[in-house]
Length: 301
Image 1 (cartoon, helix red, strand yellow):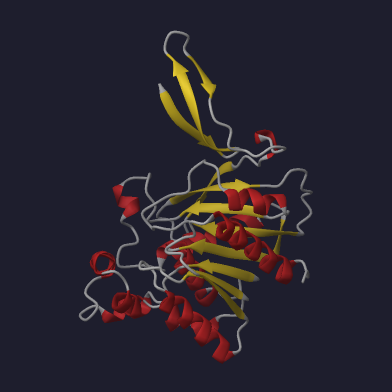
Image 2: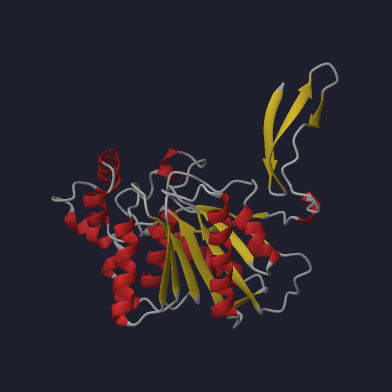
């Protein structure tokens, strides 16, 4: 039997299982020369209570090797997209890159994530950026208690819904974050309705309601309502041909923050859609992200 396998220390590879021997052997080797699986950081699975006491939130925590517990290190709250998705115990190139640069990473599966039952998955419907955001902020609270992290060096980042949540985090809890990166997220649910693919318009209405009758819900869930609170330097990364979270969403946040004097920078990738398919753009996005964090948390230029 031919199957795919990956884990935190190894990207997708093909393996063959022999029924006669009950053993498997690896066919492909995706890690490039000089890299070993054992040099990758294995995450810890942790749990913490939600702020409202309704849920137990699961998260994966990545701690760089030989990191002293001295309360001086930066930490990234890494927010998955979806929201009907989840962070699993699989290979993540960015997280491994960040851990290699000395960043602790916590990746929470906030309410709305899959894999924890239907009630949990639907717990953020019509409450986008509400309870689910509190679950993300609780991840920051938890990681501060480990003794590794400097509370003044907390970072939030994510793509798609994770990008949206990152913008909600820096605007609704501005005192928590030292820097942020948002990748192709929603800035305003109402303008998103105007510019996105028609099928996705219907999806948004299924999770937020009718944009006319429930306009207040859309406004309450939009980062634009809270941008005046933003303090953390924000890097925006966006594909120019994104039909899911269109370029107009990224341009909005950049324009608003620049006008009010908040530090913001954007980079747009030509011929990319929702997420970056080209290897050179994936590498560039990872490097830009870590350099952004290094600039504001480690004083590097």
